[in-house]
Length: 81
Image 1 (cartoon, rainbow, N blue to C red):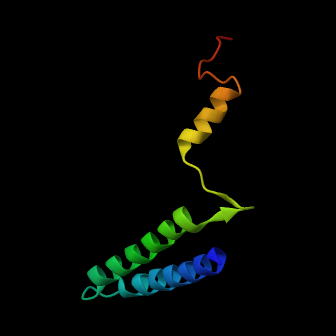
Image 2 (cartoon, rainbow, N blue to C red):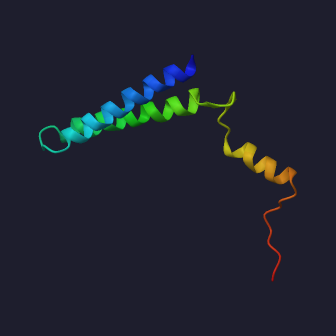
């Protein structure tokens, strides 16, 4: 279900981004076009953050990535060569 919702969000986001870019070509509509394009990209980013799944696993934050590196023995210190 969330994949179809995410696809619709991506479609809406990309269409609004393209419309916003088209509106940037005229000075009278440039400000509104910039807002529309930014809104479309914000919608796509939020959809990715909250709805994207890869093999049933949701996106993780950077904290979980650094925790895995710590569990693997990575300390962040380099030995001199």
